[in-house]
Amino acid sequence: MIGRRAGTNRVGMRRDDSLLTRFVDSVFHFFRLAEFEILFVLFIIITYVIFKDLTSRPEYNRILVEKPGGSDIWPF
Image: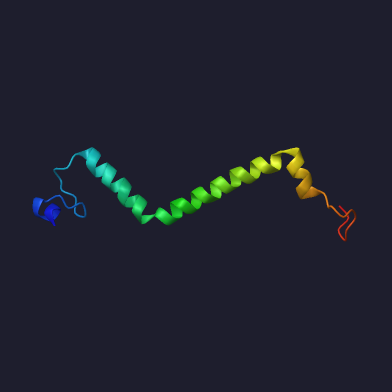
């Protein structure tokens, strides 16, 4: 309520705000608008990096490739 009386409401940014203030406010507004999408993309990237790191090691790669019971229906 105080911000509205003083004229500092960020919904309708005032023109006498500095360029830096308007830029930072627009970045925060974009982040609030696209928060789920940003976090989802970060999750996918982090998951990819971890999985790529695990599969690049030979000891973990054998787990993914070899069948523990020997020959199976699928002869690789």
